[in-house]
Length: 303
Ligand code: G3P
Ligand code: CA
Image (cartoon, rainbow, N blue to C red; front, side, top):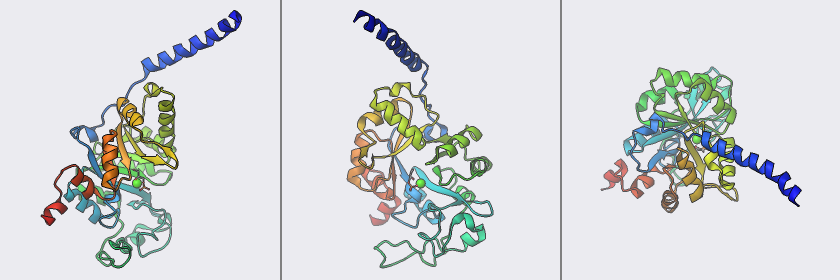
């Protein structure tokens, strides 16, 4: 028995020592410039420009959301056949425009000839108020120029060789490196982007989120030294609760800015803010602003 205890003691001591060393060496993330200017108040992020209010990922949406008073604009980036970064969510143009086909199979001129307001309806398909109004798929450059200094979340939608470098170059050319958070569901894209563009803040990829959840579950989140500054997570993933009060608190302790997607009902917004969420990524930024007691351009119109 004594021999067994001695046999176990050495590995246990080594393991404990390794954990202690890792804990002492771990470093929390520091606040990136894009978030440093905000006070501690919860932030409102217009998901795809506020897709519940107007056609998603259009210049119109981003300009209206900015005028509404949101803190950040969220958008998705693909690359056209002729190599332009374009702002659209899906791999195909079918759902949001009057065209068909893959974004990567179409040149910019073909993409921009499409009507990006064609399918948007406020009443379940009875009316289409933005058809024929000149809304089109913008380039990222056009969005950055048209929206100026407002902070942005830019999501790399497809792992596309060279896109990460091009994104970094566009952000640099437009003077927006300190104004954006770059995210992706592709860990490899994020790693590449961080290497090419270390000045730009990023959010956790799916692998990093899983690691954080696992460490938190084991009570070891203090070991985490994040290579990212924002944590963009849903409340649940299938049956699994992701954004628990504990996870949010521990992520914040590691210096992360915790942003919840996609939260559209005010009751859900309230619950997640009460759990410690620092930003709401929402299709209805007007609802979030109203909940937070912030006047909006829409509310003023109704007054
Ligand atoms: O921030 C993450 C969120 O944008 C993911 O949702 O709209 O790109 O499918 P989506
Ligand atoms: Ca997105």
